[in-house]
Amino acid sequence: MKYIYVLFFILIVSLSSCKDEEIITCEDENKNYQFFSNHAGKVWYRSLAVYEYYYRINQDSFDEYSADDQCANYSVADCEYNMPVGGIHLDNKNKYSQTLIEDQPNFISFRIESVSLEDNYSGVMSYSINDTGDTLTWSLEDNLSFDKGMWFVKSNAPFPNIICD
Image 1 (cartoon, rainbow, N blue to C red):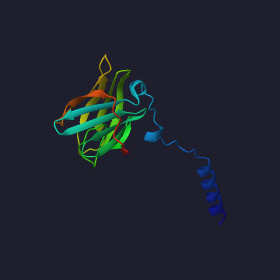
Image 2 (image 1 turned 90 degrees about the horizontal axis):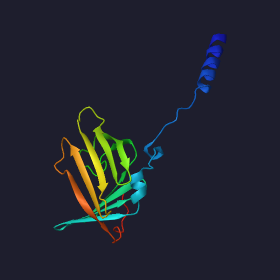
Image 3 (image 1 turned 180 degrees about the vertical axis):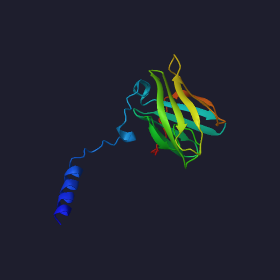
Image 4 (image 1 turned 60 degrees about the vertical axis):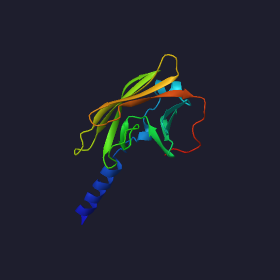
C-alpha cells in the first residue's frame, strides 16, 4: 500500500510541475499590417450588370458584400481557417492556411494552401491600390479558380448597413 501512496505522490508532483502551454488562436495573431492600417475604413465598389459588390477594409479584416445580401468577414491573420478564406469560395469541409508573403502600404499578399490531405489547393491572393488611391485590385493566382480577380473603385457611399460574419 505504501508503494501506491508513493506512486500517487510522484504523479501529483510531476503533473503540478508541468508548465501550461500557450495556445495561440487566430485572434491572438499579429494583425497589424501596413496595408490594412493604411486603408482601414475605406469602402470600395464594383457593379457588374445587375450585380453589385462592396469591399470594406478594416484594421484586422475586410468585409465583402454582394447585392444578394450576402456578407462575409475575412480575417487577415496568419492562421488556419475553415473556408471561405479571403474571398475564395471552395470547399467548406476542408481547412486552409493563410500566410503573409508581403505587406506594403499599398500592396499585400497571402499564400493560401489546403491543410487536409484530400485537397491540393494552393494559391497566392493579393490586394493592391493604385498610385492615385482610387482603385483596389484583388487578384488570385491558383490551380483551381475560374475567377482570377476583380477591381473596385473607391466609394464615398457607406458600406451597406449589415453585419458581416
